[in-house]
Length: 284
Picture 1 (tube, rainbow, N blue to C red):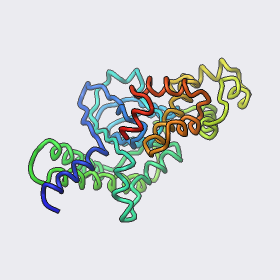
Picture 2: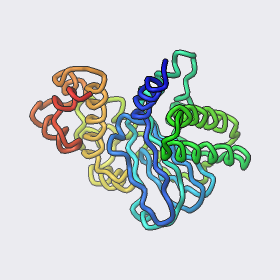
Picture 3: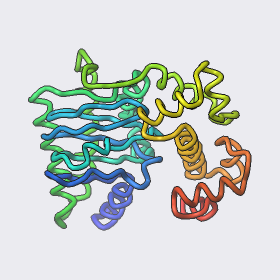
Picture 4: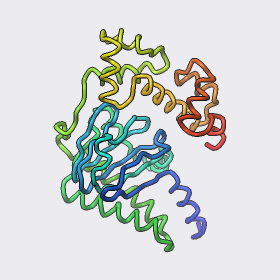
């Protein structure tokens, strides 16, 4: 493989991950293509609150937040004006396929964090220094135009994932005291995710959990930032997005993601992603 071919290869790989280095006073935004990405938030300083799937995480210096694909998340609106410094990485599933060939599943920490519903951990000082140094290498290599910079950036990204997995599994206790959640709302979220293709009206869900529609709606909004309807729509659109990305037909994605009305699906998809499903399917 000549140098030009190598550069083209790693440029192609680079499109499957993105990153941003946020500095003091700069608001943290969510990747617009968040549905297909695993996300890593590595904080050097500052204190903010971040909401993921109904859990509010109080994040401080040295904390690392892992978010899996399809998980609803956003910064707490009260934290948007707070100062912090952090690296944020978005990694597409396709990025990891380059690693499966050598029998390494570096999505393990994401999956375990999602299963346990504890996505926040804190590495020790030595680990954090290594992690932050690799982050800086990725940033500097993607900014310069020296020969091999794409290769170094990509290999550093792989190194970062290895360090994160090692750090995650070496932490004996998850930072439970920094997490606020509502057990009932978490049960509702689990129920929605397990019955996404079924009838999920507010009345139906409230009946399943023997609570009033008003109480359910109020509590759900408080802990997730979304109404039950908004959350269900985002989850269904996320599922449809993933199916289309993997090559399924628009009709299949519509039905299998829980939409009973095709025209409503088309409108909702375009409103969420800025283009209709068929356009997205072709581009994918």
